[in-house]
Length: 428
Image (cartoon, rainbow, N blue to C red; front, top):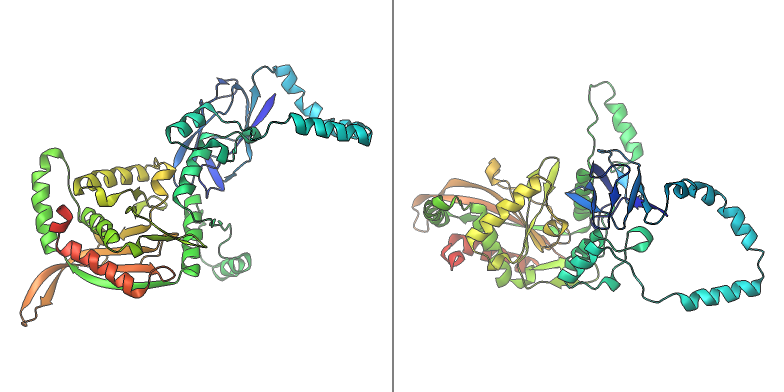
């Protein structure tokens, strides 16, 4: 039997992908669980495995081909027990199926009814199929396969379905962010092209990642009632403690950053003000016990937000090592979907680029995001009129007013400020 191999949906929001690399070639014999290809989504490069044993008959897309729609046929495999000669006749058999169906319809109504009853009686209920790899992963992670809809051939559950189930269980928002092929609008696009027809330009291709950014952030600004709270935070004590820590960590090749302190300070603040540890799930608000924090990482062509789980329980050293690993793998597009989905709060920092302050767009379905500027030495007038120079970072909290009222957001930002100005509490 010849089976189509379809472009898999490797994340809940994936609609198209790029065939980055074929690991097999025509004529190869594969078993269930063997790797077939590397698929590039808008955020990562992931491996795609076979769901059944057989021989690769055709590879229908070339390496590097982009914008391949999910569920489109990318290859064909000849199942175990069938011969090449029989597979060559598949198209003939399919072309005769209409005539065969017409002939079968001459059967009496009584016979048809009997056949339907027999089929209904013989068909087992709650039957589902899965690949060996999917079964193993489900067993390791205690996932009920009967509750998962398979996307493999004939509804078979594959590895990607398990990953998607985990992601959806973390992010309960039922809303799907729809990509827009023409975000400007065709008529406006034509007008713009006419207006610039006398100037030299080149078309810049909108990548899959950029389309996702366009869709998500446009939806965010159009549907989320943002409000902004700003605060200047003195970090001289933090800088002194950081210098002492890094001096002692030289031999271990570990260097704590100011951003590591900020992540820890925000994680602790979410514990102190749990009303801000929330996400918007359309018909409900979900409040979390753990501080799972997404950190924006700039990569070629866009950005990713890997999630640091249970940040409130981690030491500064653990945060530093983990976030560096996540950022490095994000830039290489090696993150797994569960590593960049989830969280309830985001941090975006442009301080290292000299930006003093800015307003960040909330990352749906998160309740808020903190924009962090550069540490700048600033003259400060004391209560007695004296002037001193302090290292100040300017931060802006963007919050979703549907979930977080202004007074609660102010309390949250005050707690973040306290944790950073009194870094001893972070080290406890």
